[in-house]
Image (tube, rainbow, N blue to C red):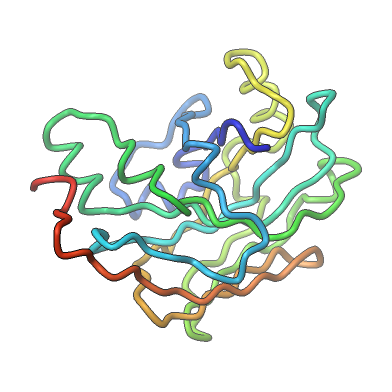
Length: 209
C-alpha cells in the first residue's frame, strides 16, 4: 500500500529554468496522494475534466518495511496545468492538479542495492516516439541519498511510501490516444497508452480560472 508520495520539486536545473523558477538551496518537498498512484499499468486515464495534463518523468524510490530504499521505478508525476495555474493565482493549494485519480503513473519496480548503481544514468521519455525529456541522474541538484535523508529527517514517512526525485526539462502535454514510453537506462522501460474519460453531462470542471 502506498500511503504517501513525497516529491522533490525543481531538482534538475534545466527544469527549474524552463519553469522560470529559482533553483532551491534545500530539497523542496510536496505531497501527492498515495491513492493517486497507478502501479505497473499500461494505461494513463486522464480525468474527464482535465484540459492540459503534463508529463514529468522521474525516478521513484520505494521505502521498505525498515524504511530503507531497496526498490525503484520510473514514474510520471502528472500535473493538470490549468488547475495548477488557477490555484496559484488564488494562493490556494495545488491538490487537484497533483492528486487526481491516476496522477502518479509508476512502472514495475526493480531492485536497488546501492544508490551508486543509479548514478549518471539517462532518464528519458518519448511521446508517440518523439523524444520529449532527457537528462541524467548526474544532473540532479540533490542526490538520492541526500533526498532520502532529508525526507526521513523532516517528515513522518511510512513503509511503502514513494519518493519522486525530480524531472529533467521537456515537460509537456498529453492527449487522448498518445503513447508514452519512459526509460531509465539499463534498468527499466515502461509504455503507457493515454485515454481520456468522457465527461458526464451532469459534471462541471472543478476549478475556475
